[in-house]
Image 1 (cartoon, one colour):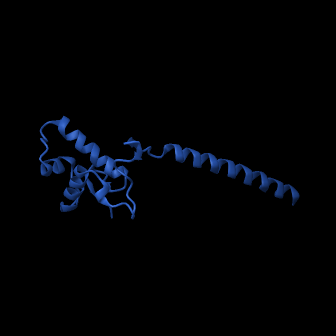
Image 2 (tube, one colour):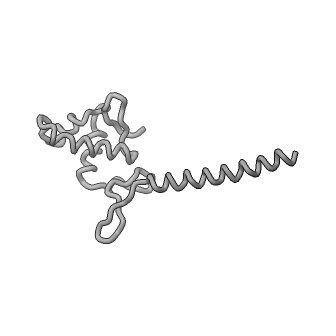
Image 3 (spheres, helix red, strand yellow):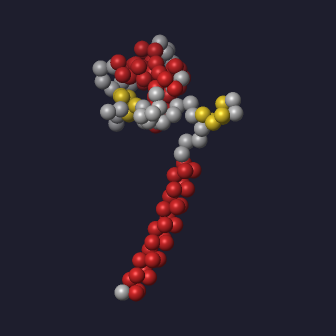
Length: 121
């Protein structure tokens, strides 16, 4: 019984050490806010109940509005058409796609397996 108790004590210490390492790794992998006017800000904050959509830059608000108004999941090309982006030029469409992906990464949109974007459920 003592041997098992000693093994459990060792396992608890190992678990605690691994948990601390994982917490440190998660903290270092979190998005780092930029500096604006000496203040730390994140241009596109993560979606949370207490974070309003109005904190987003106007262009991102327009993108979200277009995706919301669509009948279903939309391609970046469709969003670009609605916003008046010259979709025939790939270099003009790619920044829009990047913004859609950023909104997806921050939890404000969802990307379907076929590459379309839709609102979160």
